[in-house]
Image (cartoon, rainbow, N blue to C red):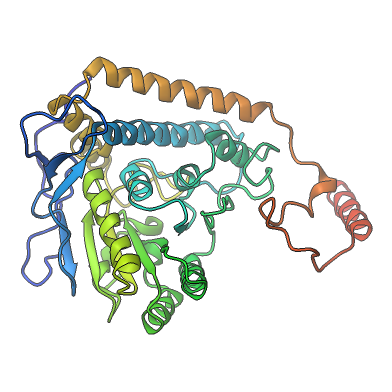
Length: 411
């Protein structure tokens, strides 16, 4: 396993108030002590690059971060698993086993995994259509995600929702309408405050959704009511297949909350991502300061969706350069090896384990049957959360309606 290339190519972002560009390399964090303890659960201290964060009307998070060997190895394994799951979805789509829309997050693994390690089980997460890793991290399964993509009964929504409609009790889904999840996330945060819960809601959106009016309306309400909402922009530079500078007059997304402070983060270094999420949660929950904007500067290797080759608005050389010099998994791999946490062979074994898990999940998902047409009106709510009754068609009436639709399609 080759170590991360040391050659650095500057990432050009607009300068904000004369400061330097945000650091987006994956391996600039330094160990602050000679050797971590042999005990994998004992914390040790590392220091992030000084340009890992930029701020707007708030202080920077501490650059010194405490991590453990156990945590870093877990995050490495999870990032490898999430990437392989997305690669499996890519292959299944190209084999025409997945139909419809499919948006993958290959290259952005430090955001989903870093987020999960910085929040609590009862916090809430809601995002857009690049949602598969978040669904798994928030209590779902790889088989459940792949089964849903394939339209099978063992999918997380029993094959009835598809790529953008996957939920758990603490994950409020991928959402297909651009930006629509942001006001819903503000509503979830409102419910948390109303119920007196000491939790936050993290509402994620892409740079392509950042110009939606409903996003700014949600910002306004969240600030008016001082909601425990963290609005997270995953800035992969090419939202909806459009370079950011062509769609946004202000591409410093963390500054666009008006009265809401903001934090821009190196989204390619998982330790920076983890520290930023912990900072945001403390801001919104423990310190009760209200909403905060996070902007993760990250990168996706594929196109906007499976129907987008991703090379009409950027070069193949750019994508390859990012893969070889700034990959978040390889960056964490370098930390683990150089800090003496695991050997190259031990990491290779984790890679093999991740591949075996995904291969088994693909086969399990394929074996599951498709949903029964007679069950189309069920599974509207997560099991155990259903209301005592639901308005709409009666069971018998629904059966007749389904048969009518099938007859129309066949004839």
